[in-house]
Length: 627
Image (cartoon, rainbow, N blue to C red):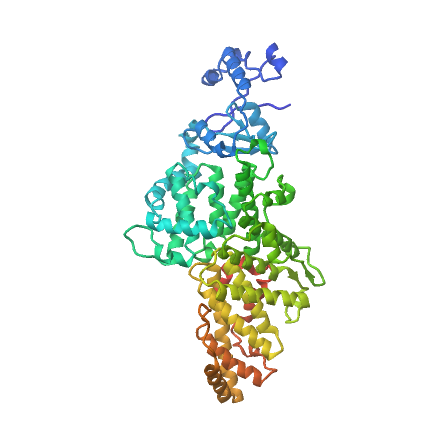
């Protein structure tokens, strides 16, 4: 037998009120009877009896509740209705059907609202009563409260965070960059770009997200201001200020529209860059919060009737699903969205998107298959390679022939990044330069294509999403493996030259992307140690004159680099000198001459682990070691 126990304003249970026998009307309806207990109220509960009401008042309340059942709500107005029911601004609490508490709340609370995101619902929404929020009981005054912290943040948000926004003239340029290069590939903000939110806070946050995303583009350099009369900021300072402002606004609870909040969390997860090792896992954390909101709203459930805008809902779900896979690749995280829990047909959702976004999602589908190779328990004792379709055929299948060259080139980099990861070798073969033939040729070709696109073909013209530095870092790992393990001097020198070029490319992005900055720090440490080792070897073997001669000859014969090519700085001269030494002593392994105090094992783990989804979750450790 289940007994429903009421509670007072402090949450403590009241004394139970027994009814000798329910009235005939309540027995027929199988409802709890309040009609016969007026004479049994204890002396110390007279004030509670007034709140329960008389029999006639309860009949009116019961009739009103039974006649006014909530109708299916549109997703976009779900939070608005909750705000109307809760004028104090306190967010409602959601209790799923799997919780025993939901049964008791639905039976006893007249204010609870049934979730109708899908047929049958997923649970109930319980609004917080204003008298509980304003309780002055000793427990409420002494216990910590998240809402008290949010109230303290609100004044700070209005005075500091909402004012952290680019001037209108600069924002116009940043918005144009976002619409041309970023939104076609990842339309996370949806219709909010054309129809901004009506409230001031939502509009400001959207402008901040757009400015944060567009700041990575080279064309935004002259527009990185946060006040009309202010000076130009560095890209790092500009992005850090916007990221912290957006996070503070989100944490303050001022964004009450859950759909809009989900979009902001997802966009911030993709575009924000950590400013210190302590923030290295924040993007993955923000992705988890976005997925949490998605599950709370039931966006993963296919229910056409209860979705106000089915196309917008499917697009948002596709963005969250793709971001979940990208976070798994970038940060070595487990996927949070699983097909067995999704009601939508993912293939159908992808086919319904615009061509550029459709092509992006088709590459994410390949990435999803590749991630399966690296899951625990899926390790194989033989080489495995996943067959990939030709990128040109994918463009034709997606109908993306007419999209801009910047978007196509960026997506090609993403495609070649997946190609590098699409093969797996047994652990005993990962420390050699001779993997399976198909694996070696695919990785080498994909790495060379990434370096060529970024450094020569599309300099400054890409859509600078985080997939760009990620692709370069994978190309850097491929070249490092050749340089580290190859037994042929010519291949070692070729790997070192590619390693230097990729290091230079990452250095050009290190003021925008924190992962690029970390990889550059490690790569430059390796190159410095190689210089020291070469200097030591030349003194021991007497090859100094030969190396200088080779250096001067190569410099005289070298042709000037083509316009727009990547400048590798002083690395070219270093490479020529070391090449002559390696050719003179073919059996020489320059890594054996490193300083014993240099942690070469950590470098091997980081750079080679980047090809294995293993070390990518330890960006913060890398920064602390090599930053």
